[in-house]
Length: 457
Ligand code: ADP
Figure 1: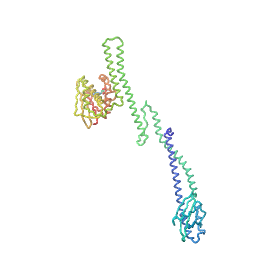
Figure 2: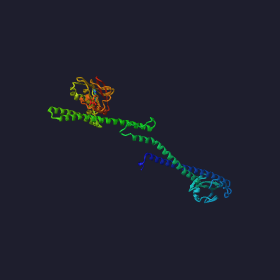
Figure 3: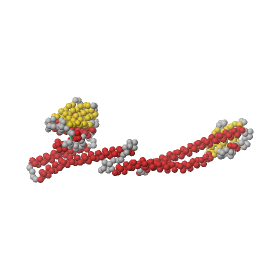
Figure 4: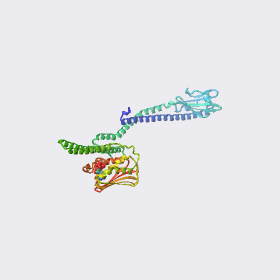
C-alpha cells in the first residue's frame, strides 16, 4: 500500500510513526521513573516512621499498651498503619492502629526475621516496613504500612498532562515535519518542472545553477546539466552520422541511376554498355565498402574472444606490409620495415591487422608516387609503438583534429578518386582503444604524416 504513495507522503507517515514511538517511550519512561522514585520516597518515609515508632516503644517499654503512637499518627503522611506484635509461642498484637488485613501474621516468618534489620514488603497496593526488636528478653515485631494508592492522584495528574501535551507536541512536530519535507522537496519539484520542458528535440536548454559546491541539489543540477550536454553531443553526432551515411550511399546510387538512365535512352554499342556496367560496378563496390565499414563500426563489440591471446606486434607489422606490397607497387612506393626485436601484447591479431593496414593504406594513398613509407616497431617510455611515416601531402592543423571522425575526409573530391570511405581511421581508433592503446598523429602539409600506435607493455 505504501508503494503507491509519494515519497513526501511516505516520509510524513514515517515521521508521524517515529514521533509517536519517541513520545510513547518518553511518556512511559517518565511514568515509570516517577513511580520508582515515589516508591523509594515512600520506603524512606516508612523507615523514618518505623525508627520513630521503635524509639517510642523503647521509651514506653514499661507499658506498651498505652497510646504511644499518637505523634506518628498525626503525621501528614497518610494513610499510616502501625502495629506492634509480641512474638513468642504465638503472635499477639499489643498496640497499633487498624491494619490492612492483607498482611497476615505468619509466626514462622516472624521468627525467621533478623533482629534490628528493616524489611520491606509490597502487597497489592500496600507497602510495609518491619523490624524485629528485643526488649527485656521479649521479642517484638514493629510494622508500619501505607497505601501506595496515596500517589494515585499524582500519577493521574501526570497521566492527564501527558495525554494533553503529547498530542500537542505531535501536532507541532507533524506540522514541522511537513514544512521541512515540503521545503526539501521544493528544489526537486522545480527540477522536474524544468526537465519536463527539455525534450529530446531541444537538448540545448539547461537547468539554472547557483554554483554552490556544498548544496547537494545544486550538485545534482550540475550533474544533470553535464548529462544533458553529453546527450546533446551524442544526438548531434548520431544525426550528423545518419546524414553523412545516407549522403555517402546516395551519391553512388545517383551515379548508378544516371548511368543506367543514359544507357537506356537509345540503343548503344557493346563498348558503351560495358563502360556503363563497369562504372556501375565501381559504384556498387564503393557502396559495399561503405556498408561493410558501417557494419564493422556498428558492432558494439568486436569478436573479442581472443583478446587475451598473446600476439606479436612485429608479426602484425610484417603481415600488413606483405599484404599491402602489391597495392604500394601501383604507385611505385617502397614499404620499408624497421623492427628491432619481437614485441608481444595481449590482443586480437585479426583486428590489429585491420587497424594497422588502414593506416599504411592511407600512407600509400596520400604519398607521392615513387616515394617511401616507413613502418617501425620499437619501445619508448615503457610503451610499445608501431609507427607509420609517409612523405606525402600531409594534413593541415585544422583537419588533423577531425580525421578520426566518421566520414571525415580532408579533400572529398580527391579522396573519392582514391576510393576511401572516411571510416578507416574511426575503425582503427576503435580497435586500438579496445586494446587499451591510443593513436597519435603528427603531420606537416606537403611534407608528410606520422601515425603512432601506442600500447602498454
Ligand atoms: P578514408 O577511408 O577516406 O581514407 P580515413 O578515416 O582512413 O578515411 O581517413 C580520413 C581522412 O584523413 C582521409 O580521407 C585523408 O584526408 C586523411 N588522411 C588519413 N591518413 C592520411 C595520410 N597519411 N596523409 C594525408 N592525409 C591522411
